Length: 545
Image (cartoon, rainbow, N blue to C red; front, side):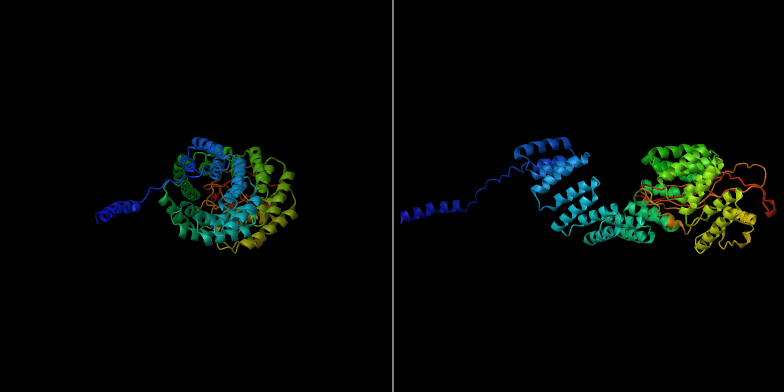
């Protein structure tokens, strides 16, 4: 009995020890991955030198087989601008892990940055086979198709991305497609949906405000630009847009005050100095205007709008050789715009080169399909050269364009244009047939609606940007003319401009009609009629990429 009790006592501690949990040995990470945490820590802290040192050590230990170390090193190379080296490393990652869609996405991204868009599309398609519900792949495919100008495919891919995951950037790129195609209404619809999805995105609000500004819907433009400034009072794009609207209404001092705020944020912005220059131009401070415009030209030497404005200011100051230089440079950058050739012709006429001026007018008339002032100026040149028949043909072509434009509800004819056309018509004895059914707009008014040919001109390619504005005011300086009753060339009173912008708003000066200094009657047209270089202003703004 005593032995049984002893056995029971000895068995009890044994069973307690058997129920006691044993401490397990910590699991050791494989040698290929043991430094990944440290690599990640240095990378997110942007301590790239320390990160590269750990990566080098890790790759030496693993004989170059650590996928994560190679991946992070490729990311660092890309940040440093070594795109080709990063591409090779991402391709190595894709070889080590061929079923990982992220590696293929990074390979495609590097190809995209190298400008190899077709190759990037092929790799993105391979990644899509591994992950069919990745919105980023669809979005990037759409961006690649945009660069290849395959807008239909880009449209489909971006819509697929929105079905998978709604994102602000996808809306922006989708709206850009419609802007590149010149379809402003669809672009506005896309941006309205984007604002509903992300109402505090200042970039979307600013872009939508600029689009309304282009269409002349100023109340909604102010509303969206104001909302953008409410969420971000330092948003220089919205401030620049607001200053532009004040400038177009003739409030140059208030606009300059706004531009001072922008100058603190982006002192090297070409649109900013362009707009400041046009403010001084509107105040008739032409030397200051040229100084600011040349600074803008220094910051953006290949932007034709700045060269256009410089040409107009020099025409205003009767510096025709300089005007010829800047307008010629603008034509080299924008060879499909008829108004530029018209300005070139005016400069050539004042430089006493009527033969080349005539060629420039002919090219302007060939390129431009909606601006009647091109034909009016051409008719004046032909009349001055004694070619009454050719002048009559151009005058009749101008009348055809006016009849096509007069049905536009927002069209208002420039008063100086009407005056000049009537006087030329009287000289050609056809003036009675010209009927101006729309109200005449005074050149000193503070508001001008967009013309019907505005949409066509917006399709002109422009580098990064879209023209979003319209002629709002004119401020002209008139030179003294020689004695005699003479007719002057009329210059375009219409705002026009390019596609998507780079940043902020651009104000594009415009020429206005050149006035007669003395009354003209039908009996007084004797001899040739010289041209003058009087220029006015029109403001043109455009949106941002």
